Image (cartoon, rainbow over all chains, first blue to last red; front, side, top):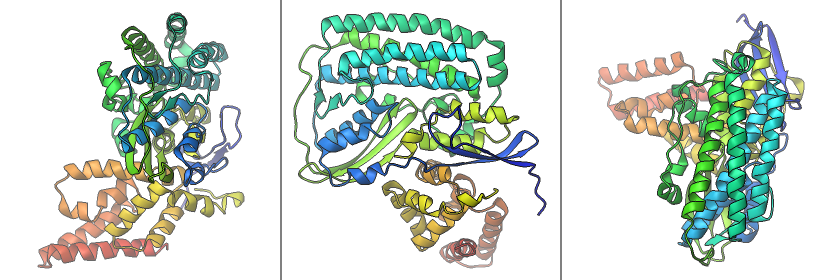
Length: 361
Length: 132
């Protein structure tokens, strides 16, 4: 059969726009992308296999090392799965503190994702503003948990450290700063004519395609899907959480979705500080035998942990499904198809916030 | 897709993906659904899908299950037609349409539905075995 392909265009595994190694193979006619494939496997960790046979105390630390950008949610979902296996209750104060830390993690992850996008479309000024603002969120994580990335803050039956009164004041003022600065940066993004040219109607993921490929997180919500696991989480339900949904399905929508979610996270943190219940932060409990599957909402979408433990609390089986698996696949087979220029391939790929570390767990 | 010389040996990496704990459960379900040898199905999937697609098989299978629960078409459901043509597109639309027409034809000619579905599964297995 006659091939209609002009060029087979490989991008990566090492590319200035990619934070982590991935290889995109595009078949193009002119500059128009006809189809794309993503090949991975450059940094495979085999962490699921390493976890098997180890006690939960070790697996807890391994879980947050799956991804350096969303380590808190890996810690949180693993611990919540273990708690459900062993019927361990969490004190209300600890549950609220978990939300604060998780939302701070979401803020820094979304700011990093949007930094990467702005950098990819050559808007370095806005990119540098955003990466600088991310430091404020990381500082707050350090203030509460004692570490910026691998915090190991959440433990079965509670959290490790309480939030002091003076720290909550610092956190509130940091939220004010992030909100004020981000309002300005969002206005730059919304009003930039060159940003619109590079982002609007580029990398379309239709609602139907998002359903078929099981896209998750901001990628799915920017395509009109009301899919957010926080709506199923008891603490978020108490806080009256409602997901943000957009319908324009393009790169612009995905980036704007993350900006909007940062504002939403700021509101959630403020609400948690205001309504933070008094009491203990650790309820105690013993991890026992059982099997459970629990889903949490990572910054990039649904994060699933299937854990089976023995009577000593050792992990004997574990399966982890990270959100980037779904989003990278949706990007490769739906968003990149029909993209008009090779330059838009990288920006579209980055707009789906791909995390190779999560994918190569 | 164009194959590059240094990409000829992706089989090992792809095999690790399809044998992960979550994939193992889903591919076992798929193999049982088609009464097919799991190793043959793994090989077929590895040869026809890229790494990102292989990683996403469990999520796509769940999407299909949600769709299938709402569907009234029993024959399509039992033959996993939508699954193999749209959600995990390893068969072409015309191939799956041809199988469906043959199954419908058998039922019209008096063959029981169960037997016709069994024959349909055999036809799908034949398509897979051309590669395996």
